[in-house]
Length: 372
Image (tube, rainbow, N blue to C red; front, top):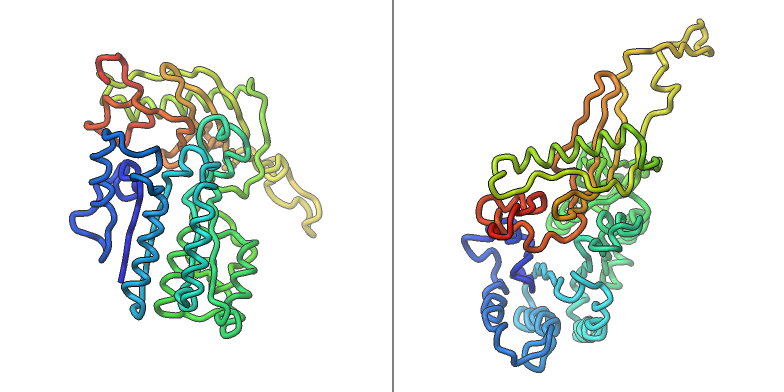
């Protein structure tokens, strides 16, 4: 028995910027219910985050409980997502703490969790407004919370797997590792040490301690394991790189210039870089027989410097964070769309592009009020 339940129809993962499903994707699918109650928002019969006298999160948690009741003896996979309380202010999560505890205690007392792996996770942490401008906000965007809970007997019967799990709490892991873990639950592939050549590694295996972002195919923009050197905001190359990044963004919207304004630099708010050591860049070869003396005369270096830039654009005061590579050999810069983050809300500023190309919403500032 399968179930997919997302409580926010406007930003559900398969519907936000995507087209949803042609057919019901699981046995139980909560979207029709939430579409129905969303159409009743204008009727002022309930307080915020409530449906009548019942908190909305309690209705959502009730689906979990009821599915356990209805399918006691059947294997189940339930993926339930609730962002209503936490999306704008993670402090509001406290409103659901007690009810979540009661649900888990209830399922445990009735024996349901004795054959269940519970995964509690987020897709990211707090990453909006002023908090996102801080270093903790940068990490919250890149390091979502995830926790596993196994039945007590599992720890005894599969102690090596639990040992691997505990070791992996200190290793680099990704959401793709969760996918491999779920596959392992269906068809176990053995413990041991994971293969670094695989982008996803089951958490039942020990993640190699030397795993780095490039092993997991994590781009530099999203990697939380890099040591960035903070630059002065007047750094000439950083400013030039920022202008290049804005030109790249403008190229994305150039075909819609009739509605999307051309952006320019408002202010550079943070700049940092990662560069190879100068001696490593200049190293050409060993100049003596034993390799003890280095020749630092290399001039045609192929080294690449990474810049991470945070800046505002005008009009619209958009706030972006971009990771850009600068080739020293030919003095060229490259930025990928996958390494551009819009870190403040754009709201209705991009309404004019919504029906034309919704993928460009974070870049487009509607040129005139009449376009909105």
